[in-house]
Image (tube, rainbow, N blue to C red; front, side, top):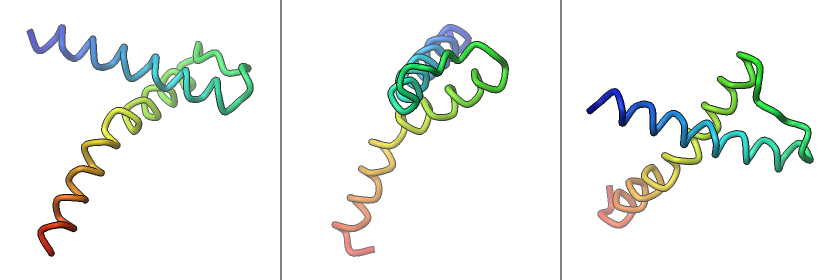
Length: 65
């Protein structure tokens, strides 16, 4: 089950990363080579986890920590 979940998260992060990088590059980014795949995956992970980090920061700020 973990293997399937990892594949789904990686695929979702990759697609989000390619979409963001394609927007930033004016449609020229393809994400097909090894480095581009890793870059798209990293950007996608950042986009996926940003709301969770913002929520944690907000909770810390509200609690006065």
